[in-house]
Length: 303
Ligand SMILES: [Zn+2]
Image (cartoon, rainbow, N blue to C red):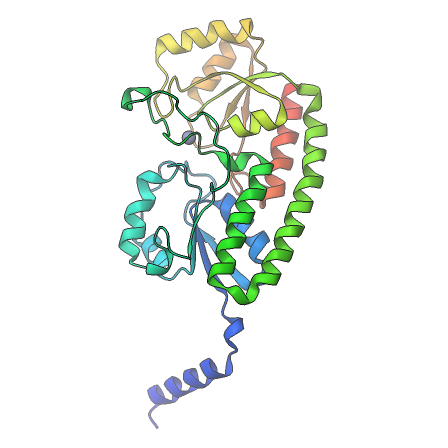
């Protein structure tokens, strides 16, 4: 036998010998937060990969050819939805030509399903309003209660594509939800002294987080989502910060710190760099560590 045939038959034997259950379910998510939750729910049965990294702005991800290959091999695809990834996910899904994960197929999960979106526009809007999402604010994962619903949506998707794992997925989901409930009371306890505190945020990424933890957005560095600040808008913010007694200027790591620093110098408010996603900061490796980090960081900064 020539070596090449030897290898081929050896591989064949390996494949036959390998129990079907051992092949992990291949999950591809758009963001690290979804990947973190998918790992919690999928446990040992899944292999999870995120296309965007936590340090990247999830609205604007470069659609690499390698992403298409990952999607072509995926058993389950999970997106945040509410148009967050609209600019880059559609072309990738088309290019991947994977019927298992196209919109509406069993392997497609929209993580926002069943979540009540905040800031759904009530009037018709056009592009002059900025990068406004017509279905509401898409930064849903920043409320741990939404994290539970996202986990439910992912569990349903996993059960569709891997029904043999149903009991395990249900068990993992229940465990995750219980741990979220316990952690949430801990996080809320930590944030309690700052109830009603006003902050400025860079992009409008935090409405779910602020609402859950009792903080108030007094303004945004972006006058409209996705639109850079103007001189007149900065002047308004400089007046607003002392008037509203703003304590901190929250900033995602992927924005330039120029405008926040300028505001801080002019007003004495503090710039608070905050990772809006898992893996966007050192020590933030899962969904629980994300909220540990956010609440610790804010409690320190707002004190
Ligand atoms: Zn946004």
